[in-house]
Each structure stands twice: as C-alpha cells, then as structure tokens.
Amino acid sequence: MTIELNALCLVRSFKIIKEKMTDKLYSPGQIAEKSGIYDITGPSGAGTGQERTVVEGEPLPPTPEAGQRYRLIRATKHKGSK
Image (tube, rainbow, N blue to C red; front, side, top):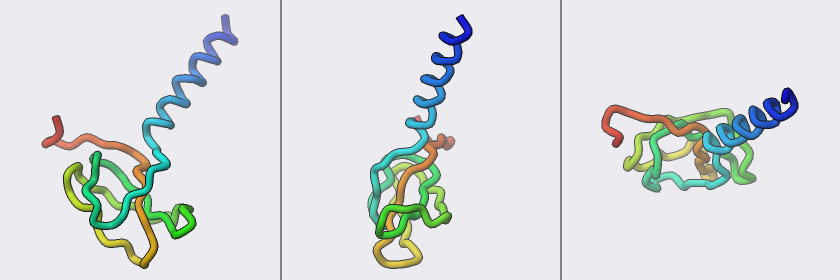
C-alpha cells in the first residue's frame, strides 16, 4: 500500500511540474498564449535567471540581448482571465 501511494504521489508531482514548465520557446513580440512567468533563455536554450511576467494576449517584451527567447515556467491566472 505504501509503495502504491508513493508511486501515485510521484506521478501527480510529475504532472504538476510538467504543467508548470514547457519546452516551447517564444520570441520577443510574440503574443503570450498564457498568462505567466516566462524565463529568458539564451541562444542555446539555457535559462539566464531573468524572468518576466506576461499577461495572456499581450506581446512578450524585448529581451536584454539579441538571440534570447522566452520559456513559460509557470502559468498564472489574473482577474481578467476566464
């Protein structure tokens, strides 16, 4: 029973982590598909440690350096969302 519960918790945790972060990269100026916290990534796709909060339907802001992109790391809700 304990092993089954641990396995179930692990699966649920994995699903939550997977929902929070995606591998899809977005370009500056692209319209945000979801409200959330976006990590700025370098040209190789590695995170820079810089983040921006963007509202769904708004364009992603310019990045500090050329060649950088965005990755959604945590989807959020705001008062205007459905």
